[in-house]
Length: 134
Image (cartoon, rainbow, N blue to C red; front, side, top):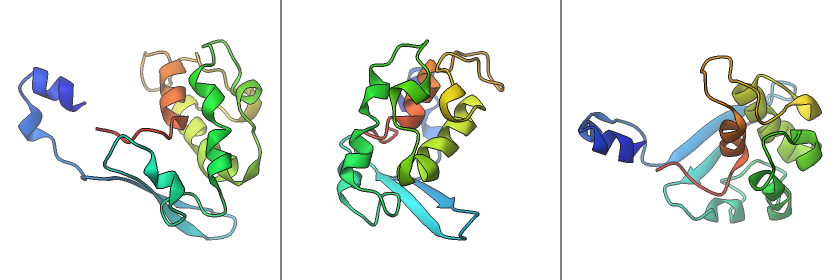
């Protein structure tokens, strides 16, 4: 985003947080937490329990890696595990927001309801937890 804004001469108008932080709430339990991706490109946040989804571990995040290499015609449910705390508290809400689809029926190439772009990139970005936004 910053590269684009810089290219068109509007970077000085960008305003936003220095770190990527996303608040969540589990409506069924009332539990609240914040995923803090930090400000860098390295995913060091997955090593810090205070910065990741509660009750998840590093292995949970590594199980999402296959989505990075999946083809656009692959179903999300055939690519990554669709169960567990990380899926329920983070991945499923992100897929619902990005694809307006849930669980195994979500294809990575469905058109986004609010934009004309293909969502394979959006789906990958939604679950690509290894990079913080620039």
